[in-house]
Length: 124
Image (cartoon, rainbow, N blue to C red):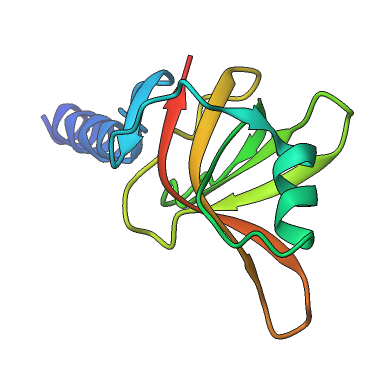
């Protein structure tokens, strides 16, 4: 009896910790993905002084395994870049290898490092 109760309790705990976020779909604020550009082109535009919103494309290389608050994209040129959502919405932790489009803005931290703050992500 005690073993059965313990087994059920453990099953519930492990199931509660399981990431039920689907690997594909739209996350965060919805947006049209018609004007998505390569990350390197968007970054060049930002560095040239164009502080605007961008929709950038890439392949998900890694993701936050705890709260779904960030992703890293691998660009077509092989470079990787960090995508942060400031914990405004949950992104899947199981989307590695999927093509994705992120909509948002580049930000520069106090060290001068540039990252991409996304308001929405579409994972294919």
